[in-house]
Image (tube, rainbow, N blue to C red; front, side, top):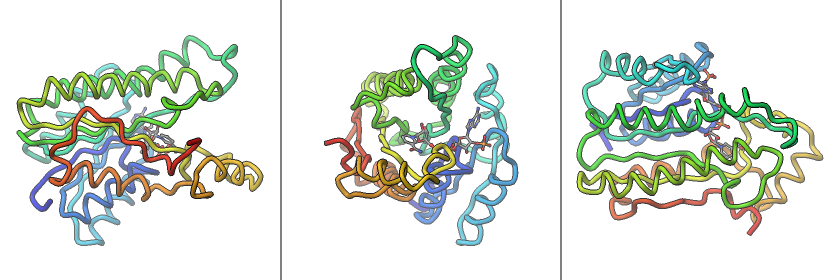
Length: 244
Ligand code: NDP
């Protein structure tokens, strides 16, 4: 994929970092977007450069209403045109349904739904024909996950956006797909440090282990590749066969 450019939101840590590294290894120049952690973004860019790849960091807090606009302005200062947009950044707010607040609901929808929507809408003039949009969804849209109802709803919204945009952008040869991870070892799941909880999480997958960021990144790399040109509007399950 040499010569192509990707934007990976939340590309500095966790699954997004693994996607950034994998795409860079495939020859893609990567815009590593992040929200707050300057050090993690710097490290990911440095790690890509150490591999002989090309990357640059873009800071924009997706909770802020004008973040898509600012993100694209920063992107344009470094690159001209885009081939792959990975909407990966997201937040969670686990807890009992009865205790979820309106403020949490608003934050979750701002970062996980509104930001990807606006990033795609405002990014379309930059996205080249034959491009790729990949939305990182979640297995919680396939199975019931009452411990994070609002988060699950945001990922359902992303799946619906995927389907509708696949039809909208097909005439330009742009594919739009969602990739759904299961439980993955990232900062999002600090509770995996508890061995009992980690064993329970591993038991969800038919492979009997917790997923690693690279397990998802490799699936994303396929969807981003030329080999996936005839696949659009799809929900790609990358949960390691969780709860089959
Ligand atoms: P992490 O919490 O490890 O990393 C989140 C990334 O998103 C960081 O780069 C972070 O940047 C960025 N980010 C978070 N909030 C904001 C914000 N307000 N503005 C801008 N950037 C922000 O997440 P994961 O790697 O675990 O998750 C990646 C994706 O995978 C998400 O869409 C998640 O919903 C999905 N997923 C994850 C699963 C898991 O088990 N981990 C399971 C299923 C789906 P910074 O550090 O600078 O804030």
